Length: 130
Image (cartoon, rainbow, N blue to C red; front, side, top):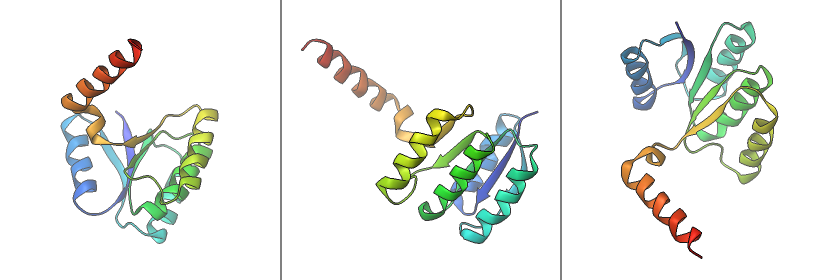
């Protein structure tokens, strides 16, 4: 069974718990909170090992530290949008994601919406015609 860590509190993290339950994924460690203290607690869990991935549903200014820690430990990561609060943090995480084996994903839900996929395909076709 896949075991995930989850950091966060509030409606989004509760949705992740429900979604995990619906697909047979276990939330092995859940740290409630969205601040620096919660991130420190989850960092200890990540360092201990045993997780197949981590979901970060915290305030944007704490996501980067958690994300970079997961990258260092090669733990797959899903971060709730928006990732970070500065362009520098986002670019740093992107640069590190290319060099790590584990996936790093920012959950922009609309990217999977049928209408957005149609629009993206339409734009791609229009560009191909240029």
